[in-house]
Image (cartoon, rainbow, N blue to C red; front, side):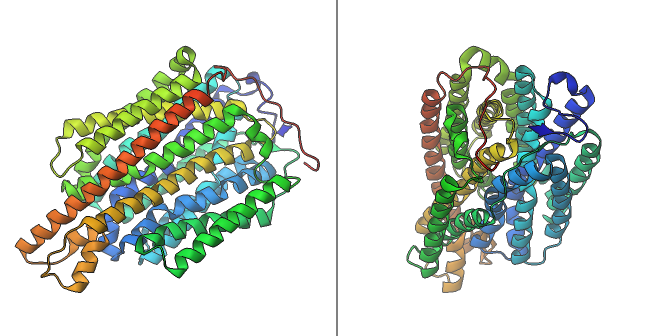
Length: 523
């Protein structure tokens, strides 16, 4: 089914050389750094971006998550393109494009230009994620080695999350926010250089036909809903919010109906017959929805509430890196063998829920760091433990003949969950801030509107010292109120999905038999 330019890399473990196998894992780990670094580093850079480009709170939200929404809309399509032209080729082209667009983002003169660059970063990232998992599956055919490789891959992503604030904080203490994007350039050059030598070419010899109408409906539907969510913070009754929400719902509905009737759908409904597959992507979706906004909230909390420098804020998140290494590479394989997949995922989510609850209870204007450090450490362990297990379950459960499409579905669920989490939970936080912030009556109308827009705008307002301290204290207290409510909602979601995982993944074997999914006519 799967062909290779030189040989069939999925035929057996013996056909894959050690250099190619571990070289592919090295490339995968470097690729894991990019989206996770982007998430944490951008959160650290947002205050500087807002000040330098004079960006509004809404523009900062667009800068933060438009890339993720575009990524989510295109992942399934890119998985299909990878099946057609080859995953190695698509990965290398996308990685080179990501490096080039990072330079464009670094020199952006306006918020609108940076938003456009973030759109292109989402497009290029979409070419990399499903191809990475496809290539890992092609070279790691042994179940135990595959779980180990996924643990290392997950640890690399977790390490990027943990080290991202530290590295970005160090950079921001010396350079401007623009340097954050330039860091991507040497990473992408390294990936392309290694990938040209070691990556196998994997493609489907009978790929499904691409569906331009389906692609258009999916992207339009997702972006319509995103726009409605973002603009809803300024009032639910606005005409543009109602129109965007309606177009988004219609687009998604028509897309899903088309998939159930198409001969060669972008989303293959037969994949959802696998309980292991469906349960895993559901867990990933809800987990990311609950947690994606957390790193951005913490970055703003450390810098704008506790008044820490970017470097100190980065150092504060270091426990997450150690937790990710422990949870992904060290604990996951033995825990799957001992507790099974359901128990391991539920345990990871339970640890994460404890972490989120600690942050919600302890986070305040004056908080002792040891409590925050313990919470951040637990978050790294729990998230990587759960994610590595679900990713390994997906890798084991999908059929060989359509790896790109299957992994595209999985990554779409993860990225869409992350994007919706940032939009929904970020909107909740913003709404609580705007409804609770106290503005002194002596403030002018224009200044009052700026203070109510966001904490960052409030802290940039030029006022007499005594009045500024009063405004800053009120704005910081309002932000903390919103943060605590938002984190509490996230905790409840994590507890719910932990219970779901314990039930839905029960009985899924520790070593999943290789699936066999028949082709549809015309494939």
